[in-house]
Image (cartoon, rainbow, N blue to C red; front, side, top):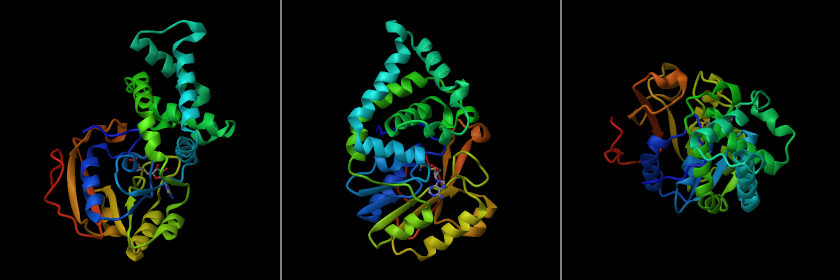
Length: 292
Ligand SMILES: C[S@@+](CC[C@H](N)C(=O)[O-])C[C@H]1O[C@@H](n2cnc3c(N)ncnc32)[C@H](O)[C@@H]1O
């Protein structure tokens, strides 16, 4: 099964996706609120539900908003930028290796590193969206210096893939409601019985995003899920004592082969994920790559 994917993103849930889709379908909820939406991977691959995509990061919010509002113009702009990179002065750079080098030089240039929130400040919304999309697809994590490494093998191919599926992505995003709120405000605003909150918060102790979580945020999240009227599905890494102290024992756990390229976790052979749900799910059925 091929899934829609807009960008590479640290902590996105590719390997868990089949089971996440199944759990969400079993909830029979009419609306899914993707509270920590990130790359939008979950929202992009759900069918027959209304989607509320949210992320506190203004760059991601702007990207999805521009895909929603001006998909044709955005795609044209991205193609234009990429063409200018590949054909400087009308000269074609045909080899894939050369294309990768050109893309790397462009997106790992010193002026593009540092705080990605600053990068957006001087740009109009459409250019900021194109910049965000290209940066995430060419430098791991999209945060410039932190993750832009030679390990990112085929940035040119990533961009081409996104352009190839852009129309499909845009036709899904067209139906979304897109928010840019802190999870506290968002969950209070959208709480109702036929809503499912998908909760994939930032990792404890990691600084992978422009907005990260402290212990206090996890406590607030726990207090919120204890009182919501809606359904929730929360994922966090398993066997982190501080998390178990806050959230208690998970409903169930899974182990996945580690395909994560991020330095800090690369050496681990598997990833253990905890699932917390407030509705019933037949945990017997699962993705073949996962084990209990
Ligand atoms: C683990 S990532 C989500 C990955 C996402 N599920 C995906 O598949 O791409 C966590 C996200 O939470 C966002 N975030 C951090 N603090 C937040 C807050 N207080 N409210 C809402 N979103 C927040 C970050 O910007 C980041 O994109």
